[in-house]
Length: 120
Image 1 (cartoon, rainbow, N blue to C red):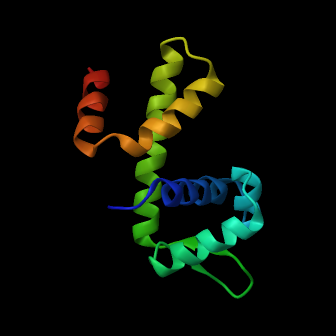
Image 2 (cartoon, helix red, strand yellow):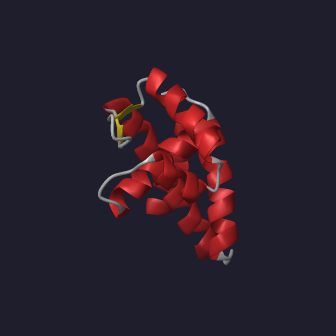
């Protein structure tokens, strides 16, 4: 599963929005992430080319199996690190921002080791 940080953020946002909205559109992603619509449009094109998403003629965005796999992995890391940091006394806002940085750079091996350590 190789993708860049920006692509991971977009995929994660699509996954999260899909749990809140009946359909996800580029404008929803733009609003969620606070990015310009033109930037989101370019990103959606790149994600389509990488086969991480599909888009209908009406502009509805759907994750492909590969896109969903990446999104779920990133989201799991985000939630895990947000929760751990909050348990350590970090504010929710800072914990979420820091988790967003950590989720992209940590290896799967290290993440699994940390996750297993905290399960004990």
